[in-house]
Length: 75
Image 1 (cartoon, rainbow, N blue to C red):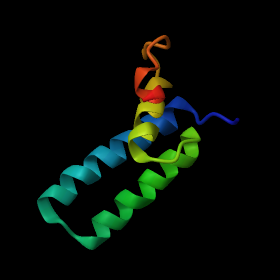
Image 2 (image 1 turned 90 degrees about the vertical axis):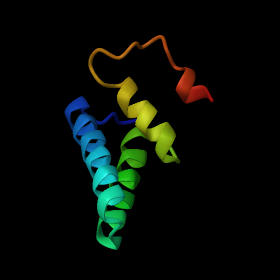
Image 3 (image 1 turned 120 degrees about the vertical axis):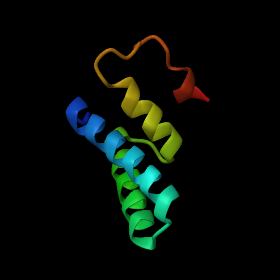
Image 4 (image 1 turned 135 degrees about the vertical axis):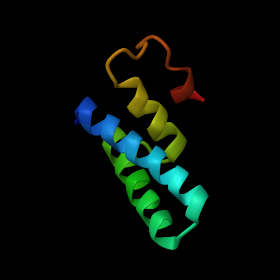
């Protein structure tokens, strides 16, 4: 499987987190659609099928992650 570059994953995580805050404040459909787009990209980039697993997998691939801790990925 191809692996996304850690910088790309870090950027996607940051985008998703910022959009979550914006959506909580505004609740607009445009922001919600962008969140869905970023979530889809995270899933594709990590080879996963749901957002929580995608976020865990992306964080696992970032520099400084503890590679031996895969508890979030196996749940």
